[in-house]
Image (cartoon, rainbow, N blue to C red; front, side, top):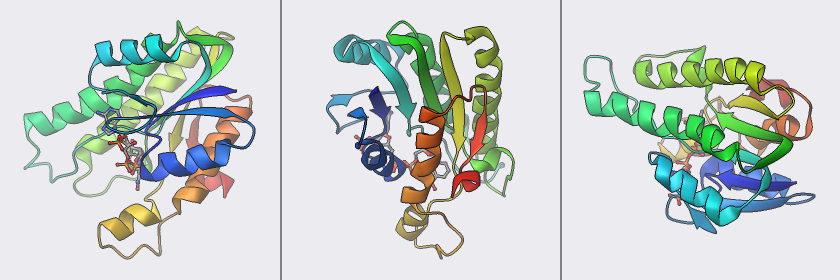
Length: 200
Ligand SMILES: NC(=O)c1ccc[n+]([C@@H]2O[C@H](COP(=O)([O-])OP(=O)(O)OC[C@H]3O[C@@H](n4cnc5c(N)ncnc54)[C@H](OP(=O)(O)O)[C@@H]3O)[C@@H](O)[C@H]2O)c1
C-alpha cells in the first residue's frame, strides 16, 4: 500500500514507519521534517499536502498536540490547541484526504488511553482523545465500503517517559506500540478504537 504517514518523525511514527517499510511504500510527513510537511492546525496546509502527495491507499496519523495541565490552570489557548491540532487536525485528514484515498482505503488516527483512563491534568487531552474515538465510530457508519477508519489508542510510551525523566517501567515501547497500527492497516476492522495493549 502507498501510505501517507503524518508524524513519521515522532517517537511513535518512526517505529510505525520502520515496521511498515517492509511491504508498503511509506511517505513520511512531519511538521518540519519528512518528505512533505504539514501543519495539522491548518486545513489549507492539509489540502496542500494531499495535492503534493496525490492519491494514496492509506493515511496514518501519529501526530497531534494537546495540553496537559491541571484543570484550574488550563487556559483557553491550551484547550484550543487540543481542539485545533490533535482533534480537528486529524478529523480534517479524513475530511480532506477522502478525495485522495483510493476506494477501500484506510485512515488511522491516534487518540490515547487518557480517554478511558484519565489522570489529574488530563482533562483537555482526555476530552480530545474521547472525541477522536467517537468520531471514528460515527464516521465509519457513513463511510461504509468507501474507506475504513480507526483510532489507535496508545498507552504511555517508554521512550516518551524517559525523555520526561520518568520511570518508564510501566510504559510500552514505541516499537510495540507500532504493532497495532500494522494490525489496523492490514486487517478489516473499521470504526474501532484499538487499544495497543491488545496486540503485544
Ligand atoms: N508518546 C506517548 O506516550 C503517547 C501516549 C498516548 C498517545 N500519544 C499520542 O500519539 C501521537 C504521537 O505522539 P508522539 O509522542 O510520537 O509525538 P512526538 O514524538 O512529539 O512527534 C510528533 C510528530 O508530529 C509532528 N508534528 C508536530 N507538530 C505538528 C503539526 N502542527 N502538524 C503536523 N505534524 C506535527 C512532528 O513532526 P516534526 O518532527 O517535523 O516536528 C512529529 O513527526 C500524539 O497524538 C500523542 O498524543 C502519545
